[in-house]
Amino acid sequence: MNNNSSLHKTTFLNTLIFNLVLWICSFLLFLFVFAENGHPKTIDYIYTGSFLSTIIVPVLINFYILIPFLLKREKYLFYALAFVLNVLVFSQLNIWFFDHLIDYVFPEYYFISYHSNITLFTIFSVFLIVTTLIKLSVDWFYFNSHENRQLKMRNQLIQAQLASLRSQINPHFLFNSLNVIYALSIENKAETKDAIVQLSDILRYVIYDANTERVALKDEVALLKNYIEFQRFRNQQTENITFNCTIDDKNYPIYPMLLLPLVENSFKYGIKGDIDHTFIRIDLTLKDHDFSFDIENNYTESEQEADGHSGLGLENIEKNLKIVYPKTHEFKIFKTASTFRVTLKLFKNEN
Amino acid sequence: MKARKSFFIVLVIGLLLTSCVVKSLHPFYTRDILYFEPQFVGQWMDTDSVHWNIQPFKEVFLKENHHENPSELDEDELKTYNNYKEGYVVYYEKDSTKTTFLAMPFKINNQLFLDFTPIEDRESQQTQNDLYQMHLINTHSLAKLDIVSNNSASIKWLDQDKLEALLKADKIKIKYEKVGFDETILLTASSDELVKFIEKYMNSEDAEKWKTDIEFNLKRTGEQ
Image 1 (tube, helix red, strand yellow):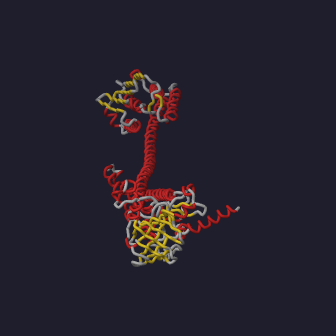
Image 2: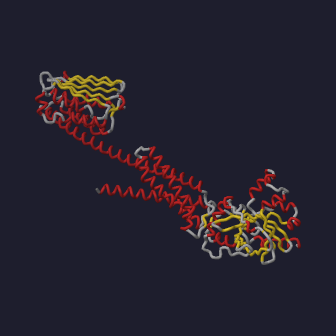
C-alpha cells in the first residue's frame, strides 16, 4: 500500500516536472518566435500566453487520453484519426480565438501583425507533433529505466536463489566428506592425511573457484577426479568405478559444482548401497559445444526411498539448471530395479 | 552656408507637412470592402476656402484616355480602370496650388473611409527635377469620411500621434518602419492587417480617437 502510494507520488511529481519544463520552454520559444526582433514587449507576452492557453488543452488531451488509450494500445489508425481531429478542432478554435475573442479579453491591445491563420495552423500542428515525440521519448526513458530496475531486481532474486541452493549443496557435501575422513581415522589408516589434503583441495575449489558464474570444464573435471580419488580411500571395490572423459575444449565454460552432486549421489547410493555388485559409470563428452554427462550406478530401491534426503541433491540440480541453463538443457533420470541413471545435456546455443 | 540654411528650412517645412497623418506602404482597404458613395461626388469648399473637386475615377480615366467606354481600353489601361473604378479623383486646390489624389472609398462596420494616394502635384513637379522625383514614392493615408447631409461632409485623417501613442505604450503589434531624417512612421503591414487594425481602432474606447489636426469640413458649392 505504501509502495503504491509512493509510486503514485513519484509519477505525479514526474508528470508535474515534465509539464513545467515543457510549458516554460514552449513559452520562451513562442515568445521569441512571435516577438520576431528578439526584444519581446508586453503585447508579445500577452499574445504568447494567449496562444499557449489555446494549445495546452489539445496537447494535454493528446498526452493523457489519445496516447495512453489509443497509441500505446496499438490502435494506430484510431490514434491517427483522433490526432488529426484534435488538431483540426483546436486549431480552428485557436483561429477563432485570435480573430474574435482576444479583442474582448484584451480590448486595449492591437494584435495586428502576428501570424496569419495558415501560419498559426501550421505552428499548431507542428507543435502537437513535436510534443507527441517529446512525450513518447520521455515515456520511453521512464519505461527503459523501469525495465532496467525490474531486470536488476530479477537478477538479484536469481542470485539469491542460487546462493540459497549452493548453501544447501556445500554443507551436504562437507557432511559426506567428513564422514569419509571419520571412517578412515577410526581405522587409523595412513591414507587419512592424504584424504584430508584432497578434501582440502576440493574445498578450496568449492570456496574460491566455485563462486564465479562459470568455470573451465577442465577444473570441474579435476574436481570430479579428486572426489573420486577421495572416495577410493573409503571404498574397497573401486575397480568398478569408471570415468570416461572425452572433451574437445578444456576451457568450455560450465556452471561450477554442477556435476559433483550427481557423482556424490552415485557414491552414496551406489557403492555404499550394494556391496556385491557395486558400480559407477561416468561418461562425460564435449563435442562441438554439445555437452553430455551420463552417470549410472547400482541401485537398491528400498535404501534410496528410506532415506528422506535422497532426492535433495537431484532436486537442487534441477532448480539450478532451470536458472542457469534456461531452455538449453535436458535433464533425465532413468530408474530400473537395479540401476539408477542420470543424463544431463547442455546445448550449443547456451554458449 | 546659405545653401545649408535653405536645406534646413526645407526640411523643417517638410516635417511640418508630412508628420501629421499615418502613412502606409500598402492600401488601407481590401477589394471586398470597397464602396463607391455617389453622394461624395461634386464641388466642395472647406472652411479655409480650399476648393475640392471630387470626380469618379472611371469617368476621369476614360476622359483622359479619350475613350467613352471601358471596352475601348487596352489591356494595361483596363487593368488600372478595374483596380480603381470604385474610386474618386480628388482635385485639391489651395492658395492657387493644385494637387490631385486618388481616394478609394471603403466601408467598415457601416463607416465610410477614404484611402488617399497623391497622384499629381503640378507645382512640385515644376520645381523638382527628374532625379529628385525618381526618389519619391507615394504612400497611402487613411481618412474617415462622414457625409452629414447632401450638402455637407467631413474628412478626418488618422493622426500619427494616436498611432505613436499606441506604439509607445506597447499596446500594438503592427509592422512598420521609421524612415527619413525625422523617422516618420511608415506602416508596412499588409492591407488585410490594416483593415483589421481599423476594425479594432473603431471599437477603441478612446473618445478622441478621431481627433486630428488634419480635418476638413466641406460644404457643397455646385452640382454633383
